[in-house]
Length: 292
Image 1 (cartoon, rainbow, N blue to C red):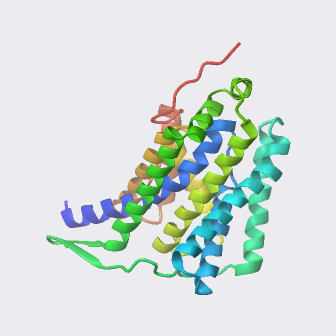
Image 2: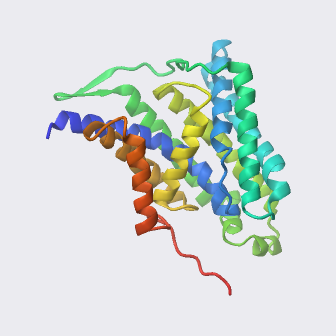
Image 3: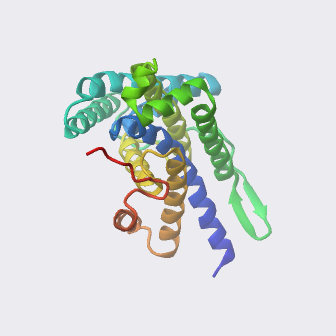
């Protein structure tokens, strides 16, 4: 086995996987609380990423442009929850799914009207250099993206684990009626989760665009990758979303490098089928007891 090529694919997988992990964490939090799949998540972060592109093109300072774009993503997440989810929260499960898909299509078409359908390069916010480790060459952009994505994921996890609002979020995810009896504002917590998902999702979208490119279809691609990452790691689990994202990135990199790049997506969905058969709850998923 060529060690240099193996390490190259390993770094490719970890860089992509860390981005998937960051996007999947916010996506998974919604399911953990409401049991609803947020199919609009990808188009929320896609829209926010285009906002960042426009602000950068207008020569807004990079930190300010990124912060505004992330805030736009958070606000869009709140709007999606208020308009597409809250009115049908208690409806049969298929209704919120259709409502979320409708919200995603609205965001995608608005983005298409504003920015068009072309694939565009994202500004190089991080200078790319080649790092030499012996005979192995590594792109510094990959290492920096990996570090940023993992740091933001760790910050998100600390907020959920250590802060008062994070503890309230975990309480709501376990039992909404009991949380209401304890005086927790469930709607406020759900709003916070959608805001956090959109905020961190745009951060992941910017990293994704820097690593690949930006186009209106990146939202759908991100949604599918986040969904697959959650299935691998365990839907509703913060650790599962992170682990699933990393494993998905590694699997796609090695599938492309050692098997066939055109068949990467087919192999990915074959992996999902196997996981659903062998461990339907994912790596960190737990079987929940049901009242009968």
